[in-house]
Length: 183
Ligand SMILES: [Zn+2]
Image (cartoon, rainbow, N blue to C red):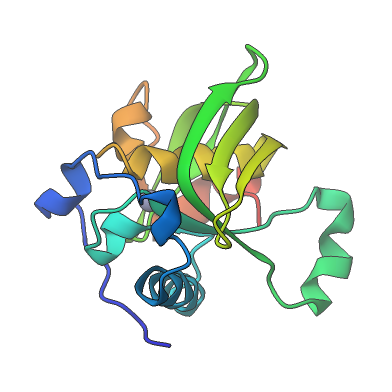
C-alpha cells in the first residue's frame, strides 16, 4: 500500500465532475489498490473521509471512517477504524432536517467552517466487492458521506457554507469554536 499525494484547493482536479466506475471493473486490481491506498492515505493524514479526486483519480470512489454514535465512542477507541468504501454513490435526503456543523477537508488544510447538511440520508452505491448496496446514515456519518459525494461533483465544503463568517484557521478554531467539534 502507498500513501498518495493529496490535491489541494486550486488544483483543477477538485473542480471536475468525475466519471463512474463501470461496476464490472470494481473488483479489478487497479481499483482495489486505489481503495487500499486511499484508506491508508486518509488514516495517515487523520482524515475521516477521502474522495478519489483528492488523490488525482477522476473516478466516483470515496473512503470514509465509520463513525458511531457518541454513546459508542469509548468502545470504539480500542478498535481499529472500520472503513467504508463506496463506489458510484447516489444520495437522497431521508428527512428535511438540516443541521449546521464544523467541517474540514484534507484538500483545504488548516481551515474549518460551519456547513449545513441533511441530517438523514439514504445512499445507493456499490461496495468494494462490486455489490450494489443501499444504506441509511444520520448525523456525522451522513455529513461525511455528503461531503465526500460532493467531491465527486467538484464541490468543496466552502461552496456549501451559507456565510463565510465561521471560516477559521485551526488555531483560532481550537481557541474560539472547538466546543462544537465532533472529536
Ligand atoms: Zn474534503
